[in-house]
Image 1: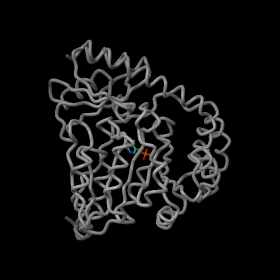
Image 2: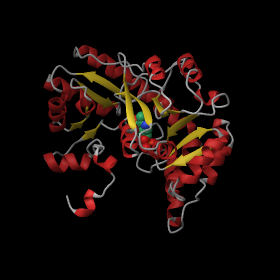
Image 3: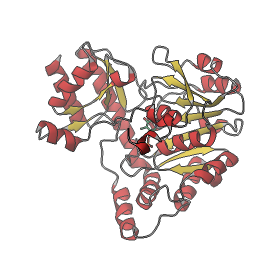
Length: 364
Ligand SMILES: *Cc1c(COP(=O)(O)O)cnc(C)c1O
């Protein structure tokens, strides 16, 4: 190690870099394939709505200017849409940034952060960089073990992350479970509920987390325009919380953390609900299609409340992912999460899903 590198914060050296799903172009280039589909990053496979494209075109000539640092219009629109005060919103360069900011706000070296295992890797990476002791609580049959998470709280606990629905498990937490959990968590511990996939959940008993914010000032709820709204490439997410808490986030964020194209597109998404409701409906239909096909192929899968499915494969997930990739289908190898027999497959368009099923059938 050179002099400078050895002076990097020791916490950084404990972090394994995040490995994203491989981009389509890269797979085409590396394997010399013409047709490649990506079902690895839970993206929305459909193009943005015409209204969103128009808003982007209109915003384009002004990219010489800095964006509105306060996300003014987006804040106004979203506060009306969610029925919360504008000051209860904080925006980020994707909701990933809000996770990072939460850790930066509350976690000192040696503090504890409680994270389900497996769960979204960004919780883990952000916490490790801050020097936190990560308290991992294993999922119980693909569900959060909230009792165990509550018991894991100590005076050193600063944040508890709850993915709802969770990635990669695909399961959700009910109103009752979340209420009981919050009631048992000390008020000086931040409960960070990550609702990146909440638009896809169709369950009567799914928690209305925003309705709990008044009672629990230690609660924050993040959401994103990356998933159902399909703006993953533009990077915009938000969190809703108490005004004071959001004020803290506001102090430490970068002044122009959400770019102007992202702001314009997000506003247009909110104004085009019919288009996005239809997308959610198509995802639901395709989820049913995949359930039927996976059953036909005798493959075990997990019921999911998101736009991705965990599929159990009889052989090594890494090997399976490699085979699928050579047939032009990119899926996620879950062995990185320690789940050696699972692949995670994002629900694509009808055609993409048929391609995936055909490739799967060829391999098994
Ligand atoms: C995709 C995802 C996000 C969203 O990330 P962005 O930074 O908003 O694109 C957040 N949490 C989970 C669990 C996710 O799967």
